[in-house]
Length: 93
Length: 175
Image (tube, rainbow over all chains, first blue to last red; front, side, top):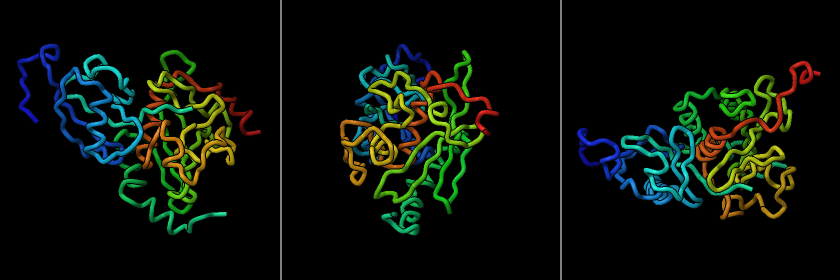
């Protein structure tokens, strides 16, 4: 994880430093450094792989709300230093 | 008739990623929960939408684990006041889940990881086979562990606007 530059605002930053956890162990937060233009789906898939979560269509949830996988992180509401949870987002019926 | 012995089911459930993980997850979010090891019954009190504007209200989720992991758990919502099975009023309505909600309008969590979604248990899916629940419907919601299922249900509750129907008066429930 890179050093956080406190002089930059969220708007200036191109890369977000966030922490992600899987539901099975909420205390095991892993750091990720992502371009704010990465899609939520791509970021979630990357994180899911790190946690060994297979199948489905993972997304990230912020404060309980699932984020749209098709949006870029910045557009989905992710901000620098957020803590995000991996949640399945595939459709129900 | 059960497929697995109680001791086999309990051995699966006591795996670090299953009930212990579910209890950690509930504690992390400060959610009231209970685990009845003898009855293999998990309860989690979640918060969801309300008909009363700008208010949130409790939902009582119950998981039972007969034949787990040969079969998926059975997840249902009960009356949060009385723990009685009251059908639709116990269930949250679907919110705008990005790729489609698992909250069915007939009062079932409609996902391959819920035993109650299958037709032989009263659910809508005669096209799924519970014996291969982890691969039965790859295009639909996937959750391989109990904490993964809880996280999906909580995410659904977080954006659910209201109950499927209003809670009945308590006097009507007790009759």
